[in-house]
Image 1: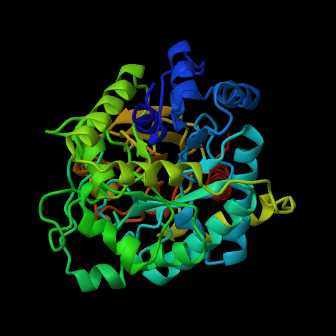
Image 2: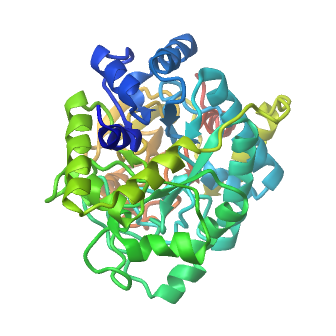
Length: 467
C-alpha cells in the first residue's frame, strides 16, 4: 500500500453493520482506517459487549478512534433501549446550573471512557431559534446564544475531564433551519452579522473552552456560498478557522446524508469536504467496506489529478492522529440521581388544570423520530399505541406526543379528542398549533430521559393515575 492510499484511509471515520467487527473491517483498520463510529446496530445494550467490540477494534489498530453520538436526553446510542440516564440539553439549559451541566458531561465521559469510546459526537452547539426545526429541538440547550454557549462550554469541559474528546456540532449552526439535512439540503438564509451574533457564539465558547473537535453541517449559507453546503465550503469553514481561530480536528457530519451527497455521491462529497478544510470524513451507519474503498480511491485520484493537494491530506491525517485523548483527570461524581430528577421536575411546563386520571390509559402517538434520535424507548410505557390521525380512545387518557406543533395530523387528533385528556409533549414545547381551542391540559418535558420519565410519572400519579 502506498503512503497516499494509507492517508486516504486515515481520514475516514466509518461504520459497519452489527455488533461484531467483520474481518474485512479488521483489514481496513490494519491498513490505516482512522476510526469507527458506533451506531445503534453496533450496540446491544450490554456494556461487556461494547467493551469487547472496542477492544476488538483496537486489537487491529491501537490508535484507532472509536466514536459515538452520546448527547444525553433524546440522542443516546448506549441507552436507546431504556432511555438516557441523564437529561438532555434543553432541560439543562432551562435549569441553567453550569455545575450540573458540567457534572452531566463528566458522567457521560466516564461511561464512554470505561467502554473504550474516546470521541463523543457532542455537545450540540446549535441555537434552536426556530421552534419548527425538525432535527435539533431538545438537543439544543436553548434559543439564547449566550446561554447555549456557556452550557456547551460546561458540558464539554466535564466530558473532556474524563479523557474523552468532545465534538461540538453542527457548524456553523443548524438551529434556524426548517429542513432535516439527513433528508434534504437546508438553507440558513441569514445575514452574516446575525450569523456572527447568534450561530457562532456557542462555537466561539467551545473553542475558548478547548474543544477537541468540531463537526460541520450540511446546509447552505447563501450569504457566504450560494452553492456548496458548509461541509464543502471553504468560505463557511473559514469562519471557524480564521475568525474563531480554531486549529483542531474538523469532522464532517455523515456524508451519506442527503444534504451532502444527493446528486454527487458520497466519494465526491468526501473529496470536496477535504478540499474545503474538513479533516475526518464521517459516513453513516451500517455501511459496507466497499464504501470505504470507494472513498479511498476517490481521494487518491483527487490528489493525483491535482484537485486535492497532498499537503492538505497530510494536514488532515495529522489532525486525526493528534486528537487530544488521555486518562481521566476528573474525580468520580457522587450520586447525581436526585439532582437530575430535580432538574427534570424544574424543567416541566404544566399548562391548565390536570384532569382526574383515575383509571386513565397511557396512549402513545407513534411518530417517526428524526434519524439523529433514532428508534428507542421514549415516555411512559404505553397501554395503547396509535398512529397520527387515528381517533384517540375514550378518556380518561394520557396522550404522549413528540413535536405535535409540527404534525398537523397529531394536532387534528388532539382537537377531536374528548376528555378527560392530559397531553404530554416529549419534544420541543411548541405552540398548540391546530388544537388551540381544546381544553386539554398539557405537560412539556423538554426531552426524554429516565429522570424525565420519573418526573412525569410523579405528576400523573398525583392526578390519580395508577400503574
